[in-house]
Amino acid sequence: MKPAPFTYHRAASIDDAIAHLQGDDAIVRALAGGQSLVPMLNLRLAPVDKLVDLGRIAALRQIDERPDCISYGALVTHAAFEDRLVPDASNGLMPFIGSQIAYRAVRTRGTIGGAVALADPAADWLTTIIALEAQVALVGPDGRRAIAGTEFALGPYMTAIKDAELIEAIVVPRRAASERWGHYKVARKTGEYAESMAIALIDKARGKARLVLGATDGAPLVLVKSAREIVAGNTGAGLAAVIRRELAHSGRDFPPEKLLLHCTTAVRAVAKAEKR
Amino acid sequence: MKTSISTTVNGKPVQSSVEPRTSLADLLREELRLTATHLGCEQGVCGACTVLIDGQPARACIALAISVDGSDIRTLEGLDQDPLMLTLKAAFHDKHGLQCGFCTPGMLISAWDLLRRKSDLCAYEIRIAISGNLCRCTGYQGIVRSIQSAAQNWAGQVKLREQA
Figure 1 (cartoon, chains in turn red, brown):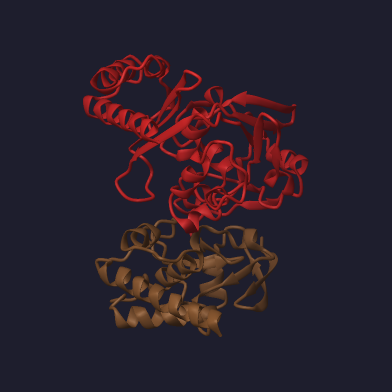
Figure 2 (tube, one colour):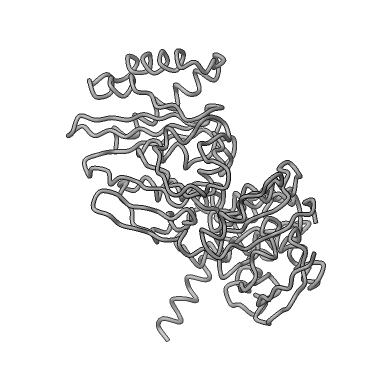
């Protein structure tokens, strides 16, 4: 066995989990699918005194289809999206994202809520839910609240989750059928974490566009100016120059090679959306 | 402190006493002596420890035994009479799908799951599907050929059964 000793509590309900996550001085962590946390425990990179296993809380697997959005329980697995076991209102973007996270044996256990809570800048869901303008539904000792994905992600592995709070659901607005998406990811190996990733959502019929860049060593970047140029019809080298300028002025201090990489990724995501 | 868990391993009910930090892989290998499940990286990267948890492939090294309490676990040993697994094993033998054999149990389980879910696979799709299983000997050529051959053979067997 690899991890240092810890105690374990299998939460029976959301309230039970919250009660056990309040740990005074002890380091208490919530366990969802465990596909990132357990490797970090094995490597002894993540210190933990107590694990609160959320896996048996049925309420965290619930799907709620509403007229304007779909609420996905935090424990919905990547494989459930991939296999379309859950409804989709993203014109296929979410099933596609689910299908290319890591490997099948990871996707069967890894969850959307766990991935978003960890907020690894190079992981897939955080960038995706920000692109889709989703809300993160949180529940904690002070009750429930929902915040936009953009406000949720504060930096690499840093989120707006407070002590003893947990993600209850990811609420994704139904996207217009006229919207087209493009995704581009640069990874050294299939299933690896991204070196760069971008998602473009372009809706020509309604004159809307959204461009989000992930794997930036920080929270995903919403490229507002570039999106405006896409709507205005700017393409090719002109658009690439706009994206490059926006990235250079994003305050992230990208070295030249990263700037080129991220710019190329964003341009290709736009091109893929245009082709769809 | 140890906790008692009950699982079904390869069809048999099993009661075990585990520490919270014990991985499913360690439970299988150390307690139950089911050593087909190999441990390579122990951090969820190499895929050698892939087993089936409730019918779904998963990494036994990053599944805590205590968290799979009540689950149905199947290892390579538990698939030794399974027609699809026998087809895969024969193909791995025939097409040089292994050299040292360390990655083979994980490869076989991943391939088994793949062929249960999909048919008409091209070499590229097989490569993507086994990208979570590392092999340091074969260069993958033989493995991809083995899975392709098994897929064709299996499709034939399925067709025969449907006609019967």
